[in-house]
Image (cartoon, rainbow, N blue to C red; front, side, top):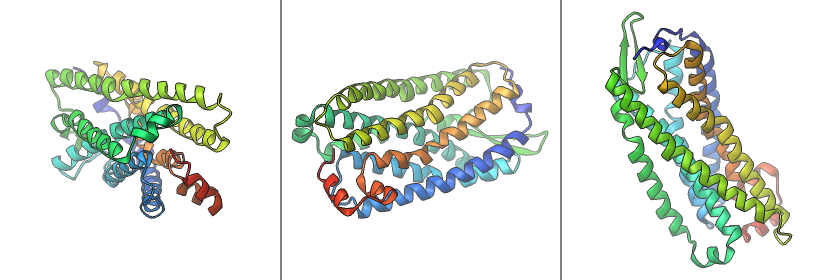
Amino acid sequence: MLNSSRNCSSEFQKKLLPPMYGVEFCIGFLGNVFALVLLLTKERQNWHPGVVFSCNLIISDLLYVLTLPLLITYYSNNKNWTFGVAACKIERFLFTCNLYVSIFFILCISVNRYIAIVHPLFTHSYVRPKHAKITSVLVWVIVAIISSPILKYASTQLREEKNTTLCVSKSKGAEIELSHFNYRLSLTVLGFLIPLVLTFASYIGLIRVVFKNAKIRSQQKRKVALLVGSVCTLYALSFIPYHILQTYHYSLKKRTCLQYNAYQVTKGLATLNMCIHPLLYMAVFDSIRMVCCGKSSETYSETCSERI
């Protein structure tokens, strides 16, 4: 399989990706640590399912954000990976896990909110935090299983003409390229397309009920609008561009530098999801809204009793 992307200059990536990853590291780390502190201090008595799912998102983000300094160093050093094969595999594995853990827990949060509002009696009778904890374990197990082939495909490659070492998502060879493309395609269907359909199907049902029911308070409507808006932003900026360009990238037998660089940009945008998650948390637990939006303690106490 021919691949002209190997001959592309790394100057574009050197100028774009280190600053992008640097900003994402700062915002993602500080935003998720801030959310975790609030969750453990202000929300410790109110761990409803939405908070449980949000906590798992925070853990996933913090695990991956700590690998971003490796990528910043890698791209700043003209794509020369100096951290060894194991670190390369772990970084690629954590990137994949973070991406699909995010998508699956966003699905869980969305479906939970749909059930809570559309079927409140069922929620109060049967939905408990322990169910969210069991679901969270299943999500981690499923994502770890579907991400594990990355440990086989990802490796380092010596670029002799520049005396540098690349960290790539696949090794060379026609059979490996084909199996890697099939794996990526399966991952896109199972980890992206199916959750996408289920997430937005729940939003369609949720919006139809919320904005037609006069008994639902305006505050709850704002929370739903914030949830839907933040998830739509996540998909539009991070998930959809990355999966479209990834599928296109690995389907080509010969890749142009323009296409290759566009795919690299979407990889940076995929990591942006960690920076947008704090907006999602504002729709799930009230303490972060109180701190960010300056709600009074009376309003906060009232909203705590109405959680879903």
